[in-house]
Length: 86
Image (cartoon, rainbow, N blue to C red; front, side):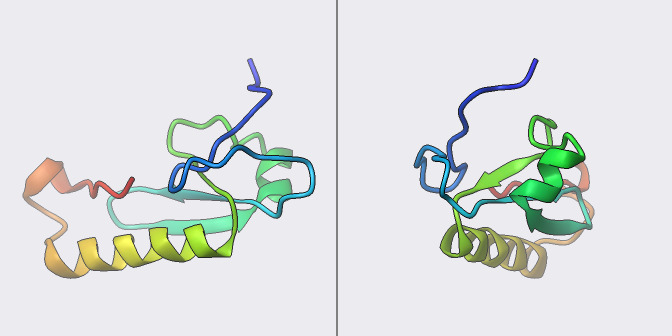
């Protein structure tokens, strides 16, 4: 079932109609960000790996976290190789 409202996973703001949102996905070695509309078409918005981002500032914050995590932790070891960002 599709959700009717979404909140930014970084700052918590609720999505409105005019917002320019992004959806990020990640795993142990990959990180990607796409426009909300493209993700909606592909039905990725409700994916367990989907990270909802209210705009560029929060997208940059998530990217910064990813870069810090990958530079300070090896891909093996803690959390079975998975990074924790959010």
